[in-house]
Length: 262
Image (cartoon, rainbow, N blue to C red; front, side, top):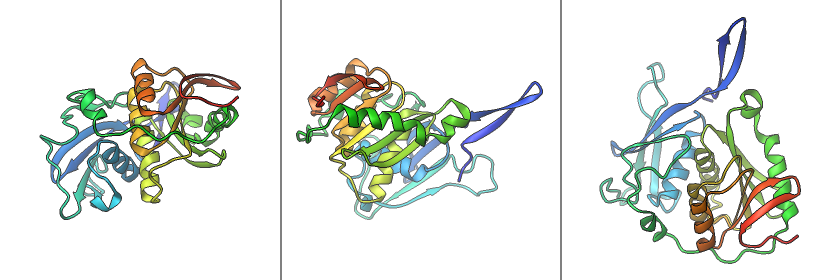
């Protein structure tokens, strides 16, 4: 497992900090994106990213994902080469994304040609089954129990997937919320469980447009965040039939889109 926490020497003591390093994602030698992430679960991150971008429509579209270089070389693990399956085509100049820039740990929408171009790739989700606010509250409350990196550093985000029954499915941590979501979705792609109907996506901090977009791509009908959503996240959630809750703290929350039973 790659190093996710690093000890930094201070005056007479050490402090644990979360690791942030670049990950360059290549397809057939062409750079698709560079994201700043916490090392670990890169395969899941890449699969989730490719899925959200519409570059792949199943795990069968990918023949291999491998880190470039030699393990003893400096920076090994920070570049990933994706080999698409025979017959699967991707043109970096006309494909769904033309980022060509660094996607920071806080933002992944950078470089999109237009938001409408992205929205055209997805259809609104079907109405989901009734879900109570208590299930959402409990899912957010339990998020901290699955954040060992945050417990050590206080500087890491997390995304968690919970079934409508309240059963925990998966949680991943990363310096960027959108990376954590990609890791969650990528793990479910590997498990053959996407689309993820009857699931709740929980994110630490605020809920951005891209978080809702990734939930939409994965078929997740409910998104809950510890803090506020952005205006664009709310707009997309309403268009996509996604229930979006923010400021979920204890039994209190604000439902910005959709309905949750009391």
